[in-house]
Amino acid sequence: MAARELTLAGLLMTATLTGCQGDQSGAPSTAPDENGSGAEAAPQPDNPLLAMTDTTTVRLGGETFEIALAMDQETRVKGLGDVPDIPADRGMLFVFPTSQHMGFVMRDCLVDIDIAFLSETGRVGRMHTMPADPRREGEGDFEYELRLEKYRSGFPARMALELRAGTLERLGVSIGDKVEIEGLEDLKEQAQ
Image 1 (cartoon, rainbow, N blue to C red):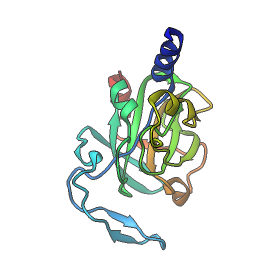
Image 2 (tube, helix red, strand yellow):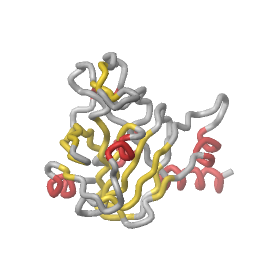
Image 3 (cartoon, rainbow, N blue to C red):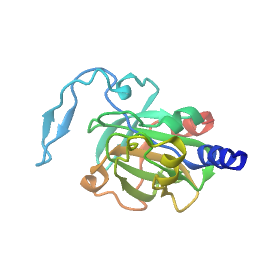
């Protein structure tokens, strides 16, 4: 029994992160419809993403995003878990104290998410679209952690950017593209 508990603790400590972000103003967001044009989205007062206040601005593919920051282990583990929607102009940036091989999972995430692993300078190194993977009825923590798919960086990344699923493809983002992150050097210094 003790070995199983240690294995679960090891999985929880080393494995895995999640993510998602939304409109902090409480104003409706404009989301692209199937033709790519904007459509008003209903306000989401119960969206935890709307309560996040530690943000920065990111430019990618000619568009600007307001991005929630995950700068410490607690925030990185929670990520976008329990977020019911990611507005089209929002997301989350995970910043780590050092570059490292990363593995993210969709723990308790309710919506599909695009992830781009970024280098020290903000260059895209690998991308995935991660489908939502909610807990199954009666599933315990240990079983849930074991079955979650791991989305790996494949290189020592310093950051990971999460956006609404389909955004990276819509913007035509490619490996090597530069993500402009406001205050990047300060963010790297502040990461815990």
